[in-house]
Image (cartoon, rainbow, N blue to C red):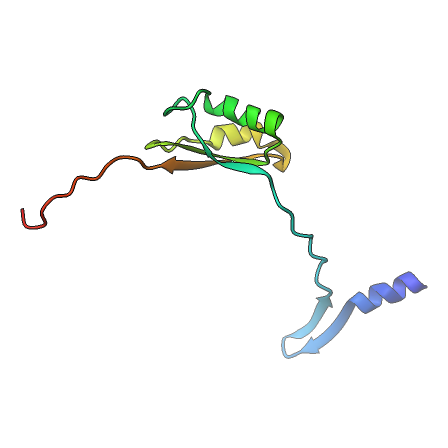
Length: 111
């Protein structure tokens, strides 16, 4: 009896201009958590020492990371295929990034 009273209290029927509307309590919010990760990792695509896939494996196994940003120099490394392998079950995420290090030449505006 108590359970049905609680269920009734959490779901009420309201009648408005558009007709009956079922109102429910808001779902309980999940507590906020910090995720351990690395936002600056280079691969063999620039001056790193590992392939993108190996970087992801090492990040999870050796360091316990939940995410890893591949930030190669002047290269935007594609991570879609790697996320399909390493990002299974929402346990790990590879994020593509780029460290822009090319110099910009200054030229006169009136050339």
